[in-house]
Amino acid sequence: MSNTFTSESVCAGHPDKICDQVSDAIVDAALKKDKYSRVAVETMVTKNFIAMAGEVTTKGKINYQKIARDVIKKLGYTKKELDFTYNAPMTIKIHTQSAEIAVGVDAQGAGDQGMMYGYACEETKSLMPLPISIAHRLAERVDEVREKKLLTYLRPDGKTQATVTYDRNRPVSVEEIVLAIPHFENMKIRDVKEDLYKIVVVPVLREFGFKIAESDVIVNGTGVWHFGGPAADTGVTGRKIVVDTYGGMARVGGGAFSGKDPTKVDRSGAYAARFLAKNIVANKLASRCEVRLAYFIGAKKPIMQEVETFGTEKKSKKLINDFMEKILDTSVSGILEGLNLRRPIYLKTAAYGHFGRDNFPWEKIVKL
Image 1 (cartoon, one colour):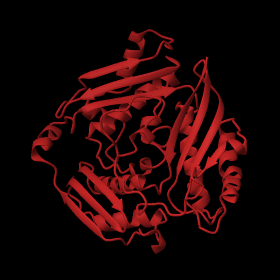
Image 2: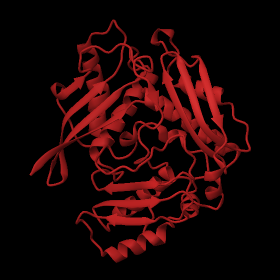
Image 3: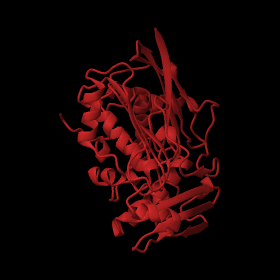
Image 4: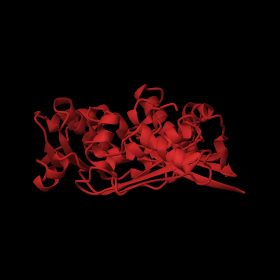
C-alpha cells in the first residue's frame, strides 16, 4: 500500500528564522562569556521594526543591539526597498531570570516543564525522514545560490516543500517539489522556475538518489512574489517547531528551542531524545524509533522516559533500555555534561533544522 507524505522547510531569511537566529546568537554570546548563563529571549521582526524581550542572567556584558543587527545584515536585509533592514528601529526589554525558576535550576533541576520527543529512522544517511531532509537541503541550496550570486536576482526569504511517495513504509519516489522564493520584478516566473529547477532541485534530489520532472515543480504558487521578509510577514522566535524537528513525521514536544540556554529541557531534552533514538537505529536495535521524555520545573531526572519502535525492534526492549541507560544519563545535569551543551553552538541550529547534521553533539553515534 502506497501513500504520500509532505514536509516543509524555510530559508534562513524567513522572518521566523531571522528571529530564531537573533535569539540563538544571544544564547551563544552569553554562553561564550559565562557557560552558566541563563537565557530565554524572544525576538520579533516586522515592517521596519525589531523587538527583543526576555530574561538573561549572565556574568558577561552583551551588546544585544549589535548582535541582532549583525545577524540580520548577514542574512541579506540591506536594501531599503524591502521595508526592513538591519538598521531598523529596535526595542529591547530584557531582564534577569525569575528567582522562583532560578532556585530549581541552581539545584541542577530543569528550567521548565514539558515533554520532548526524539526520532530516527533508516530513510536517509542522517537517520532522518526523507521529506524533511530534502526540504532542508533545498532551503540551504536556495540560500547558497543567492549568497554566492549564482542567481543574482533572488531576494532573502523563501520556503521549500517536498512530497514523497512511500510503499510499505519505504520512500520510493519524490512526487512534487514546491519552492516559494522572492525575486526581482524584472524576472519572468518561467525563467525563475527553469533556473531553480536546474541549479537547485536537480542537484539536491541527486544527492538523495531521486529525480523529478520540471513539470512536477511549483515555484511561487500565485505566479508572483517580489517582496518577502518581515515587511510582508511578521516573524517571531519559535514558530517553526515542526520545521526544526522532523517535518511532521514524528510528534513534537511542548516548547520551541531557539533563544533558550540548555538548562531549558524544551531544548536539551529534545536533543537528548534525538541522541538516544538515533543511536538505537544506528546500532541496528530498531529500524524506526521514538524516544519520549518529560520533566517538571526543578526536576533533576525525567518523570517519563519511554521508547517506541513501531514493531521494528531487532532486539529486546530490555536490551534497548539498557543501551539507553549506558550511553546517556537523562538527568538534567547528565544531559548537559554528557552532550557538552554549555557552549556556544546554537546559532548554527537556528536554520535548516536542529537534527540530521553531524556537527552537533546529539548527532554523534556511539557504537555498541
